[in-house]
Length: 309
Ligand code: PSU
Ligand code: MN
Image (cartoon, rainbow, N blue to C red; front, side):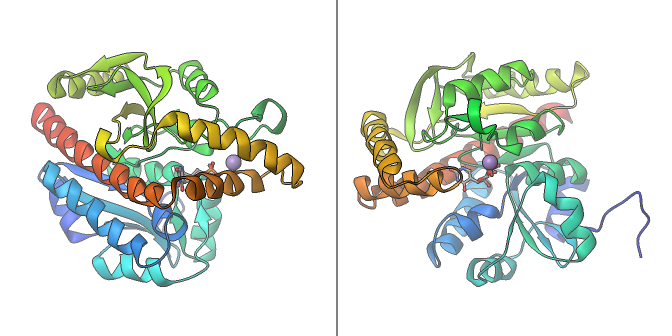
């Protein structure tokens, strides 16, 4: 039995040692393992992503919920188990308290992972694509909890923006309205997952890692208890042309209407269309963007740890 003012939080020895010494740690989500790619690509990618954090100079801490406890720092075998086990549910912020009480397991989204990172005292988190405002949200109100959680968790989030199937203009408006800083690292544009640009300019560009680390600290020193978004685009040679993706999404949206596909089912339908049109290039680009974000996050976390201590 634990006290009602705390939840079971199991931090791996490696992560807990790193945190105790003030060494850099980068938190990672597990939903990408269970819901992102098929086995064995999911496990292989998760390992590559952890390796990328290490090559950036930080310790990876992949997060999940297992048997009613938050786990921060999944081991190789934890990752393998999540990768092969079918039916592990996606657990976002709204679900966390319930799943923990029930003693169940779940894969954490960006939103629930940053809750756990904040709880464990990890200031950096990396994910290739965040959730955002969906196209047609004016009608459906479908806005990812990721955006709301950013207003509540004190974590620097490194990402490659969000997928083009979302409404990226509205996603940026939402971030601005809710006072979440967005800085594009060494780029002028807000990226779109495996596309280098979304076509939207970013509100800020910073090229200097130390100044960027300072900006993150300033955000918190100003009294904000919210996230700080840092974007980094996929490397050009691995990128998919945004014109091609945009065209495919437009065509597939028309086809979806003809096929009577609507609501929640739209996202999967559009993603399938993009995958088909890009003939497997999207799978490779998917891994590349996860790896490049993790590497940048590792580097920035290392610079940040060096500056703050
Ligand atoms: N973006 C992607 N692929 C994903 C996700 C986001 O390109 O799989 C996942 C992440 O875990 C993210 C979640 O946190 O989906 C957002 O889901 P929702 O829109 O239901 O909040
Ligand atoms: Mn949604």
